[in-house]
Length: 78
Image 1: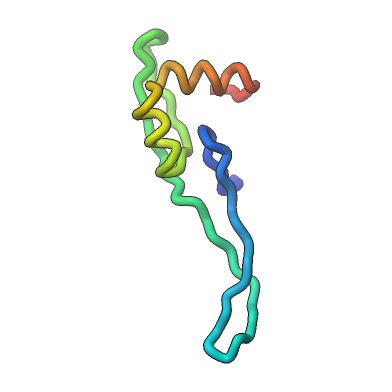
Image 2: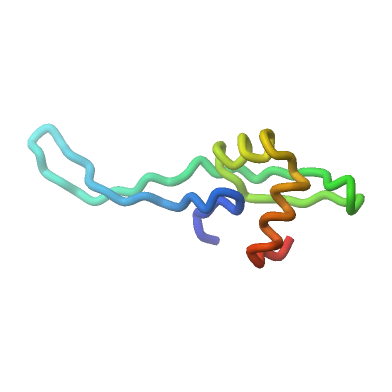
């Protein structure tokens, strides 16, 4: 499974590690992904999402119902 937030779409970032001698080696920054289960009152069931910390804040701001509706409009199967 790819390291991708289902809500915000955040993915892995790539770049260089820079040592003291300025030798550059490739590295990656993984998003802070969490597996969270939310209850959808309108459907009477729970959904499990793989979201980043920023995605959790988005769900807290707009509500799980609005976020799931937006995901379904974009074609995500939940």
